[in-house]
Amino acid sequence: MSNAELSKRDLSVLWHPCTQMKDHEWLPIIPIRSGKGVWLEDFEGNRYLDAISSWWVNLFGHANPRINAALVQQLEKLEHVLLAGFSHEPVIELSERLVEITPPGLDRCFYADNGSSAVEVALKMSFHAWLNQGKTGKTKFVTLENSYHGETLGALSVGNVELYRKTYKPLLLETITAPSPDCYLREAGESWREYSLRQFEHMEKILRRQADEICAVIVEPLVQCAGNMRMYHPVYLERLRSACDRYGVHLIADEIAVGFGRTGTLFACEQAGITPDFLCLSKGLTGGYLPLSVVVTRNSIYDCFYDDYENLTAFLHSHSYTGNPLGCQAALATLDIFNDDDVIGNNVTLARAMQTATAELADHPHVAEIRQTGMILAIEMVRDRTTHEPWPWQERRGLKVYQHALQHGALLRPLGNVVYFMPPYVITPDEIRTLAEVARDGINLATTG
Image 1 (cartoon, rainbow, N blue to C red):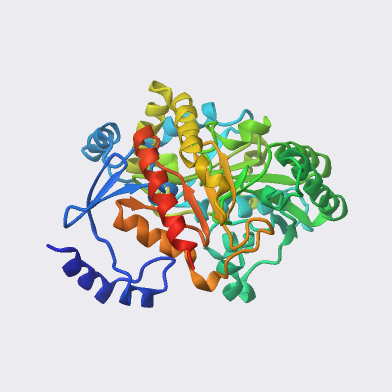
Image 2 (cartoon, rainbow, N blue to C red):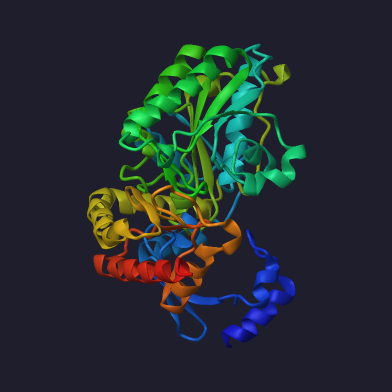
């Protein structure tokens, strides 16, 4: 079976996500036969270093033997059972362990299928909790500029990347948007902390004026991933938690992309020493194996729904595959690796290797900034590094980096003109150096002419 044969079959029946399908008249589809560690292999033996963890989900490599074994064991016992009126051991153990390792005060787990669904759960749960307390005026959510929380309509409503939401604007909830603490926009000489504090003043004003109509503020802690990997200082989260408490507003932390060690701590909120009211997790939750998400929340939220049936206060939200045993078992195996290995400590070494390997690009005439938070590193390509003038998006400079990388054995998938690394944690320093060389040459090629 050749790549070309499979690609032809693919294009006759498939509609790919986040893709203008007409591009594939000239941009080949790459069918993958197998994966091992950080490497993917196509049907003709070409290998690609998975620098983006297959859309940020893979933590410990493809075909990880420990997760594989856990799934085989579970498959022989139970593949699925409904979670309404029934339960099973993997979902109970996973919930116990998540309550143990998440920030203190998070006591209850509600499962869904994917990240967008988890955000939908948190939004509905926040609104409904206030409603059950008689706060009928609380109907709005505050989001940050440049934020992204998923593609379902509720999640899209609280996102702010126009590329994704503009088309569907007539269908979306009305939200309140606060300026982002995105530190790429800071003044010359201004620190990340100073800029993040200055930007928080806008959020403070919104909460002070409109708290009576606000259910919750939703944020991506520390890194706005789909918003070009823009980053900010933990002090913003500290101030936000305090303000939400003062004004009686819930805080939703969307750690779908940044949880499970991506930012240098197990959860990004730890760096601010805060506990959100709702913590949304997915992606790395199962090590990149199966779709599963969870919203971890407080007993005080749970208690808002706990009542006699006839009072109709229950949270009637469900998904057919809620708490799927296979997904839960993959998640337990993933947590076992965190428990047994010094993953966070090892990641410190890998993050330093990423910084060192890309340092030479800091002086590149078309690189405005190299920014990093833990195991996420981003390189911002611009037309003019002095003024930060961007390349016109129509020129698709990032796509040129993508094509170059594929030709040289790496999967890089830039966000616009931002090249980023978010690799599995089993990558080696040598592989990081190889990746940096490919990225450097790709950037040189993409910014010439």
